[in-house]
Image 1 (cartoon, rainbow, N blue to C red):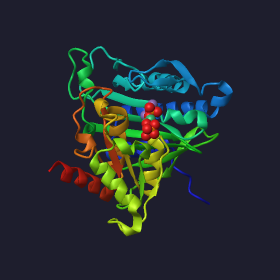
Image 2 (cartoon, protein in one colour):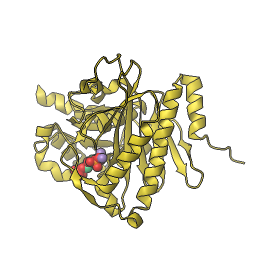
Image 3 (tube, rainbow, N blue to C red):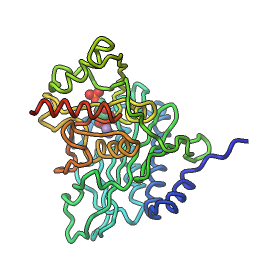
Length: 337
Ligand code: AHG
Ligand code: MN
Ligand code: MN
């Protein structure tokens, strides 16, 4: 008889015993998991509910919101507000920081999330996901200032994502490695299916939106050109390429079989600082990738060391297998000397 798989609750109880995660953290993670199950259900029924299209509103980044962006945001907001230790929420879909406490205390949680990532994939029935990150407030707050949420990614105490693909995955880290769960349809449970996920050191697969080639900086062009040269080029091996236009799907593939993902700052997005958002896209994914043995950089600096200056700030993102990320960093270094 096969051994029963651990439920998310059993896993978290074990994490509590082994690594001392707090009871509040357990509750928060379970509420996030519930949000992801609800969102998965809405997405799968999307065509019947007529919710795959756009709304008439834009978010703070000026991007048109899909109806499911708004629905997923509401689900996250209501569930993440349950845990009494959550002081504030930062969402891609909400301009302002949402303060839940009048007098936040040191150790209270700040939760950052992208409720639906890759939402341009919705109406073509391709993978989308949700991303989340949690840090602790470093001091009591006498007044509510949005600057208090500008904390480096290195301080994350939990991060993860849910991928709404052929099955619904929940991948998370509380700083003790990375574990992947799958929602077992009909059971209401996430079960541990991918324990202690690790990235291979090396890879022959990269992911970048090559339609932006003309905007890229020289180090990015150099790296991709060399991959495309294959066996006869300096890399002396063929590279494969993938682009799913959903960072969650890309990171999940990289965690599963290796690879490197790039959404760099380029000539067309430099005025915004890049495309992907630091606090609820780059930081949580950087944390997960590092916890699985990989690296995450802007090209010049470790992503988790970037000092945030705005809660919707964008950043250059290069992450995945260590050897490739280090090579791309070295090209940036050579360029600037
Ligand atoms: P979001 O749907 O939350 O706005 O994020 C989409 C992001 C990311 O997931 C993906 O890697 C990238 O945007 C896709 O960008 P392109 O449209 O340039 O391919
Ligand atoms: Mn996103
Ligand atoms: Mn989004």
